[in-house]
Amino acid sequence: MKEKEDKNNVSMITKSMELLELLSKNEKGLTLQEIVNLLHYPKSSIYKIATNLQELGYLGKEPDSFRYFLSRKLLSVGLAAISGYDIIERSKEYMKRLSDEIGESVMIGTLLNDEVILLEQVTGTLDFVFILKRGMRFNLYSTAPGKVLLAFLSPKERNEKISELQPEAINEYTITDKDLLKGELARIAKAGYAVDLNETVQGVHCIAAPIFDETYNVIACIWTSGPAGRLPEAEIPRIAQLIIDAGLAISNNIGYKKSK
Image 1: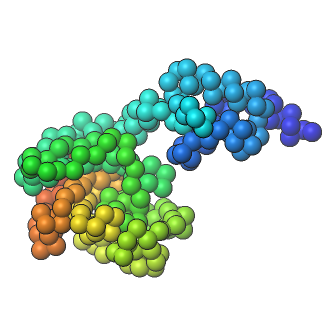
Image 2 (image 1 turned 135 degrees about the horizontal axis):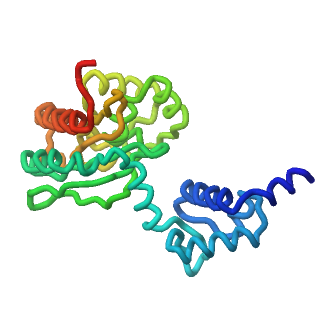
Image 3 (image 1 turned 180 degrees about the horizontal axis):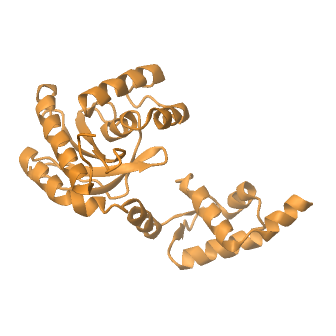
């Protein structure tokens, strides 16, 4: 009985945040009844919260299935929060220089829970380049940005993230064995960059390097993606060094100093 009373006494703000967090873990959305079943709050209060958030533009609702989902308005708020170091503004010039030099699009992203989220991109100058949407998410085990962020986390954080991963074989090149992934991360930490050679999309290569803050923690990464023919394996070390240099330049602009 007391547990039920405690549930009824929870503030509307707490319930609202729990609803938002729940939807953030269910990208396909949830119906009102599914939300009630998972949060164990009265249906009337959940309906009121969901309706208010929808009116404010923070939630959307599918007309057929009546599933609620997070809107892009909420995404913009989240991006502003995780960009607290003004990473985007401090990165744009270096991203543009890198893109001009290699011709490919250049992206910057950061870790959000168990994925990488795209913060910004500079479109390449070649005839055909990859154009991604701000807010896109990438896994941590097959993508270059995901692997490079994992590799430069503290050992404790890295092990926690790996233990939570459930790698799926996207294709024959995807690493799904966690021990093999750990070996790959050790090589990335030593080399200073990560690659994705067909692991996520066949025919596409990706190279990423870390961005650090003034406390020597990895807070973001910079990367490029392009057709394998334009980013052949023989050219990867040269291009990777350019990306490493850009990542260090951005890091220094944030306050990082290489010599600890």
